[in-house]
Image (cartoon, rainbow, N blue to C red; front, side, top):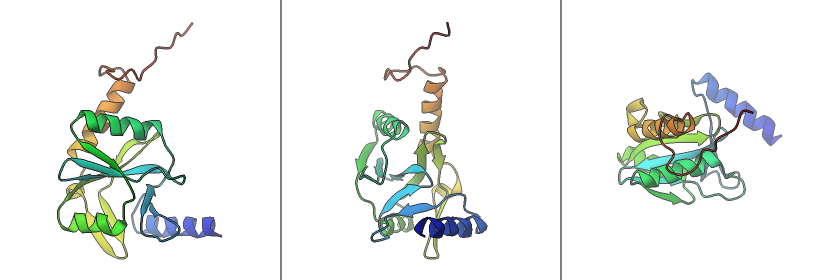
Length: 161
């Protein structure tokens, strides 16, 4: 029944023009989990990226791990912890939330331009892709496609023979 209910909610939000649902924890409905099937990340004004801690319902992923490592390499502090949705909205209203994005295998990095929670809407990064979000996408896909050097040893040559 919960699966049917969540599918129904997704349909409601799609009719409102949203392409994804930001999932909150099932117990309290207070803490950010994931966006669609992607890991969620928030970029704050103090060069800090905060993402929900891996807790069993949030799955680890190579893309998530790669983005966190690239962010550190670019001089950002990363923090994995529980994130209350109220905290996100408070930071957005105060101008402290610069960017938000989902990350995962298929999307690599997908910007979030707007959040709506209980009728309160916030636009993030002026509704455009943020500078760091674009940089992370370009860097990771550049490494994947061999257009940028792999300084981390992530790529593995494959012999076609």
